[in-house]
Image (cartoon, rainbow, N blue to C red; front, side, top):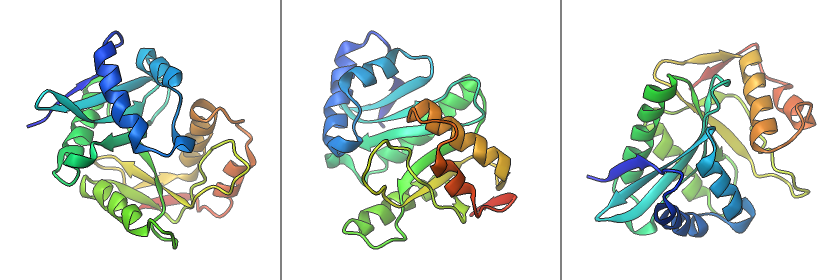
Length: 211
């Protein structure tokens, strides 16, 4: 059984073990600097959960959870390639969520994923990733096309926004707008009036169902 705990602010050895997996798990264009990750480690708005097996760090997830917001955001999650498919990732995420619920209360956890609905070279990987989250109980906003709040001139990938919550089945459009504005301003350092937010909300109905 893997051991899961929140990485402590002064755990330099634990941070380096986490960073070794992080640096190999994402394209450079999607990675934050080591200094930014160290700032997350010392911030009260973030928790880096790590999982160990046989004394080695084999996975992590980073969750954004400012107290004044009514939701959490999963920013990053990865497991070592040698242990994927063994259920450790599911245990890591579900236990991390339960720890947050016990500490900060039960709120929706938002998860940004590449859409498996579009043709792409990694369509199979995208589908497996969505299936992973759905197995632990995540639902999808229907219908909704999510635009990642990256500051880039490149065309953003087609995205979806998943939601984990034990009982939530729908949300008002006003709630979604608050979520989007908070993510864009606090996570991606964009403006609250970013035109992409209005674009995402243009055809959204007053009530959005989770499916």
